[in-house]
Length: 259
Image (cartoon, rainbow, N blue to C red):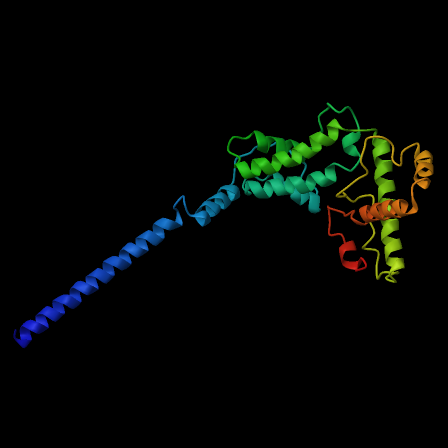
């Protein structure tokens, strides 16, 4: 074989290898692009859900008062704005609902009556809308279910407010006692203190008065238990009070509480 023939064969071989590399790269790129939207790709499914939730959904609502230029007024405006993504409108409705329904307001009036609150009506409309993505419908359902459950198990409004106030007073007293005991008193400010406007992660259980009307008898019975048992019960109750948190804001007790 002559040198020219060898050169031609080498050139043909090099060209064949180049074409094979290009075909392989093209196939790899095509597979990569196809994988982006493939149903088996968990990232693709997640992205699709995010896009679905962030889409705008035509959810008309009853006229909502948005004249107030404060924070609540602006949140109501977001809730009423059909150009906003539905997830943002639901977030705004959840926030407004916390302020439209005070801790004791759920218990006032018959348990079967409708709550005349725009944010709650909006959440119910989002639930009923067929175009609402399932994750957002579930989120709205959880919020509405909490309200309906509170209505179903309602008690006298004044009694609920009194229980809420008593519980906050006792929780604050335990926080103060804990700081005094550990030498952390007084704190730099009063941000650790719960207020009547706070929504709590736990309230006294039961639908009757709290403390119960027979509290004296219960205390007398407690005195008959062994001292170790009394101490354990007392510490358990104090721990329960220390676990009370405000859920409608950042509770600074987690920052200032004794280690």
